[in-house]
Length: 486
Image (cartoon, rainbow, N blue to C red):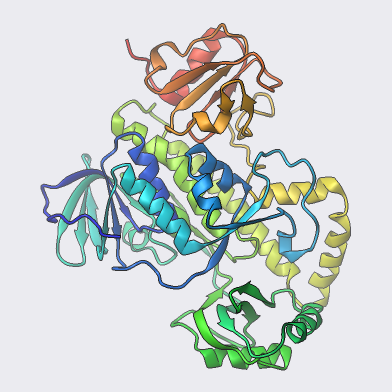
């Protein structure tokens, strides 16, 4: 994909510069462009990644894609499977009747996700510059001056670091990244094998009786996905070699399965860290730049995309001039606790994957407890992020939660959210969005399957208000969408 070319000069001004064009950065760019925010995405790599790593989009991420009209495109490139068996790889089925119209996991190559989101952002008007690495920045009361590695300088009103676990933006910002360094390491890759499938299946079953982190399974077209724990000390400097995989497979399984012809190879640890702050002035952090954790449960990419979805409309409101005074502060207030919870549940999962007798005993106990539907459901809702409830103050349980994709007289609810605006769903047919009609859509539908008279949805699909009183509604419209137009 050709990137737009332009001269990097101090006078060139953007509303938001985003460092990093991974899933988080591309999603954020698209969300900002829905509100005509001038966006530049800087990606230090000159070409997209060439290896194909399969990731899982969880229920909440599929819902977000449906809200923006992207889901069908993603489904064309992925493979659905039941939303069960995520927590610490404990093999339990997905609970019945999950509160979502998109209750599945979508296995999809990560480069495809990035490409589709980048194409979506560019189609909306975002500019993407590859080979543009942030080397420094200075912020003042009016904006941020960004210095590039090639000596160029750019000016914007805000800068968002979506530049990964080793985030340059976070380091230059001086934000602490406390947590724990990696204690265990794992090799992951996709390779061809030289032994029959039945021999592989038998050996995998044997090894996984004592080591749940070991994976060797088909990844399509004669290729196998290999995940093998590293015995002994390691680090994440440099990519592993084919011989590294062979040695670790022999150490863990007693055979290297004749692996050859790797598609891609990587090494990762279980470091767990969370940025102390998500915002300092006009500079913000999102995705892996703000949090890292073990990959158990497959929450990383999903957490970053959901950060972008939470931040996009709020930052756009700030740029467009209608944001209430504290709106941008709610990004950290809402997303920091979510990341804390993800870090905790991945810590717990890593303990349950340990071969030590104590953790194995806890694992056996939890396996029994997950036979209770409420326990299994709670853990799946946690992993897939549909159990999140932001703290909007006292109110009914629905307040602060996401609303499922309801079937309405006018079609599906999420189909009405493609523009990234708020929505008042009115079952009484008596209320109005009045002076907020430039930011909030209105839909009267007395047949909507709701237990409350009306709901006010934010652009991210979370319920900001329920009730039937116009004065109360107006107060909440002001809280989330600023002053009404005259």
